[in-house]
Image 1 (cartoon, rainbow, N blue to C red):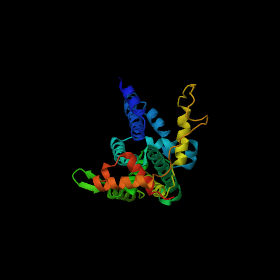
Image 2 (image 1 turned 90 degrees about the horizontal axis):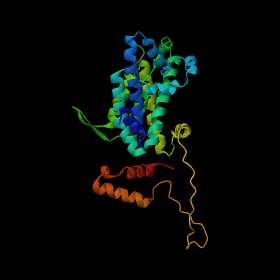
Image 3 (image 1 turned 180 degrees about the vertical axis):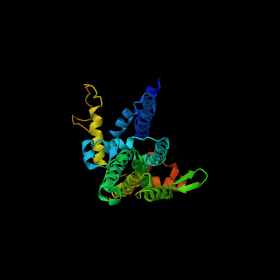
Image 4 (image 1 turned 180 degrees about the horizontal axis):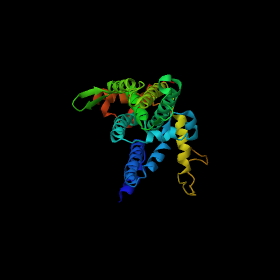
Length: 303
């Protein structure tokens, strides 16, 4: 099996949103890395720069109107190795938590919402505040930092006392990791720093990560419009199954009446919650399955 078949197989696995997001970011980064090197040898570096220009988010509103797709493409595009490395590590570590407790679809919607919020805040700040307006003419934004920080803050809001074991430091609660990352972005968002615009976008992603989980705990899913759009485009490229007609024999015990069964929906029953709580008290929280953790979260949501 070729490397392309390996990638295709990994990408097509079900319930695989986190790996898909990381794969897209890595593939785009490798494309510029592999193609850009021979182009530079031949004196055609401008080809790479033009391609990057049409993927990066401009701070100029009029320029943004001409390429509105960049509000999405910018947070799948990176240039520096350490830039993508830290973003993908944060996305993986904290995304695993959100995926386990909230599921694939909410992870996807928060990633996209975080990137959009970061991009819009970046454009707004560069055009409304005098400290940035002088630099807005040629400013372009790339990188998944806003999306990744939305995932980080979302996980820390949902599970503030969850602990990571950091190298050379030891166990640290993720709420302190998230707070440190947000504080760093705030400190470097001042005008004159090397990446003020990028750090402004980080703050937009962090804010939407906190709002998303807080609203979700109240029973409001801010990601539904995002999922509706992604489902629409996903269905356009999905192969439709062929129609298959089957004949079902009548049930001799139904007396000619049709019978249907319904599956329970909504929040889990109190009996299920009591069983899960008993399991926590006897074996600890980590003994719960993914489905049990999601049921426990559903039960905590307000009507």
